[in-house]
Amino acid sequence: MKRLKFRSIRARLTLWYALVLGFIFIVSDIILYQSFKMSLMDTIDNTLQAAAEEVEDSIFRVPPERWNTTIKQVERGFLVNRMFIQLVEISTTSPGIEESFHILARSGVLSGNISQRKIWESLAHQFPETPVYMNVIEESPSTHPLRIILYPVQKNENKGYLIQVGTSLKKMFHTLRNFLIILIVSGPLLLLVSVFGGHLILKKALVPVKSVVQTARKISTEDLSLRIESKNRKDEIGELITTFNQMISRLEGSVAQIKQFSSDASHDLKTPLTVIRGEIDIALRKERVSKEYIKTLTTVREESQKLERVIDNLLFLSRIDDREYRFSFQKVQLDEIVLNMFENAQLLAAKKNIICVIKKMDSVFINGDPILLNRLIMNLLDNAVKYTPARGRVEVSLEKNQKTVRLTIQDTGIGMPGESLPFIFDRFYRVDPSRSQRSEGSGLGLSIVKKIAEIHQAHINIHSELNRGTIVQVLFPTHI
Ligand code: ADP
Image 1 (cartoon, rainbow, N blue to C red):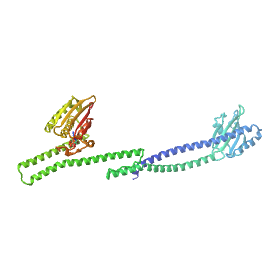
Image 2 (image 1 turned 45 degrees about the vertical axis):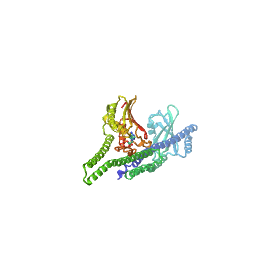
Image 3 (image 1 turned 90 degrees about the vertical axis):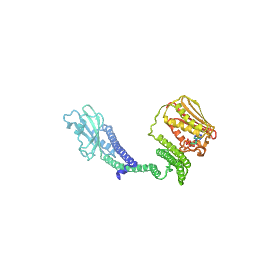
Image 4 (image 1 turned 30 degrees about the vertical axis):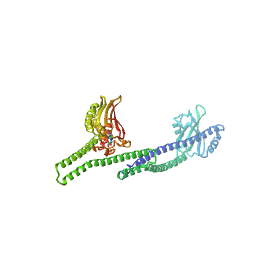
């Protein structure tokens, strides 16, 4: 269960946040501690130097017997940090090290001795040119180290004076220890508060994601009309919600289309079957003469042809809808296909006493699938003849321009009302089935035409006027 918990974005982000923040706290605490320590040390060193300078200023103005008193006076002036002061004479010409140092005066604070030998060693037996600071632990008056300044006062070549001023670092270490305790205690406390706060902020920030998930769950089980409220958010979550809502809208549209399609398809398949069943039932009710059987069988044949056409169209549509389906694109002579289809249409038109003419026929080559192009031209010519009454006229032309090839099929038929035009490419849409004398239309012809045009990147224009006629133009690009 615990492992599962860390799979949530919130838990993972909080963990990362805590780790990064913890690291930042540790680094900043180290920096803070070091700079505090340096600043304390600086203050001490400045005080030591000030005391040494004061000793230098005053001591050589009085005779040696008053040096002790002068040192004590200086020492008393620095009350906050108690310090020891001593004046040491160093003779650089003495034969032994021990004889080189001679303590001339000292304040009373220091109970022990500071090894002058050690100091001389740490100075590498060189009389210093500038003040030197050092920490001394040995023989110090307390258990804490002393901080001392060795302040050189050069008198002449063989002899020099070192003013030594020192103070215990006890107070400083005490302050540093307290500071460290504050850091150690406040660090984790601050971290805890920050992580808790971060966790709460994340929880708030992720609330909309939760609502997306909840609505998405409901949508899949209940109703596709549900949408997630975006509350006009302009951030990433708002973008996610808008995209999600758009996706659901598209899904809703597709599902509605599929429902409509299946109900239309069932209806179109059921009607001829009902007619066939009815005809057979009537024929079987009693013994009939052969003339009546012929009539029944003729109706059955007509209805089954209708069924065949619908099924054929449906299969054709589903084949070209299939993304996996490979079209056989090749260089095709479009005028040859148009002429072939025109001849077929002419036969049909002649039966209805319709005149079919070719107005213009350029020789045109385009890249396309010949079977699909056959179907497109056949459907358009079929409609022109189907919806044109006797003594009407159908005109066909194929023209080549620089960028396009234009196929125009014009008829003087019954036309279509303007309000129907937006729907005529929908599957199973028929303007008004009773308008056609032959009721073989299923409303799939133009949707197939549109699909084939799309596959060939062609554009379709339709102009139609009720009872005057229709002009259909297909514009093929020459470059595909
Ligand atoms: P159908 O198989 O019913 O002809 P289509 O998809 O080919 O189906 O056409 C859809 C509808 O558009 C038809 O029902 C018809 O009313 C109308 N239509 C198509 N072409 C023409 C035309 N040339 N003249 C008049 N109406 C047409």
